[in-house]
Length: 206
Image 1 (cartoon, rainbow, N blue to C red):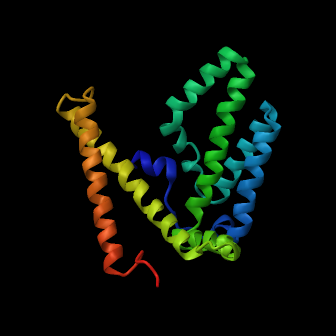
Image 2: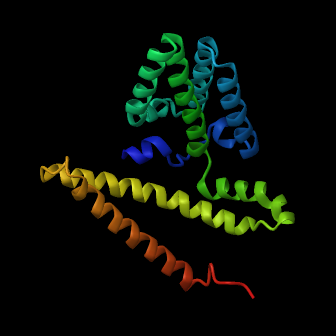
Image 3: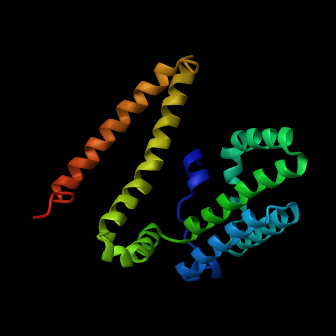
């Protein structure tokens, strides 16, 4: 599994109660768990929410997925923990790093158990009341869909370029890694724009 999938996740079909739960209920659970974890900001609260999230993963039959974000995030979490350890002590280091991991993991469970089209439709429905102030929910949904589709491609492209540079002994060359990524990103953006234009999407409305 690529790092992008480890962190962002991709829908994994299943028949568990977690998979079948309504999107609104799961989204509310994500918000409540994240807010409580951050507001309480204590080691017991972090431990309890971590256990609850792990239990939710187990109920979804996805317990093997619960620590995958850690494989990607550990360098950042380590830096944050070291800084907190130096500035505020051991408990603050554990709580801060733990809370970040809990919030990412609970949000990722939503992505793993909800098909992308359903997730996007839910976001569009949430934004629809903003039409009264001139917002366009459909365009917002399109932009979100493009972001969801583009991020894995761009992250994967960066990983491929990094692997290629490493194979050529150029892992320390910023140019060898940055230039190909930029070129691929521009080409991808052009292809996406051409595909949208071919379908008449994004044209000015009279």
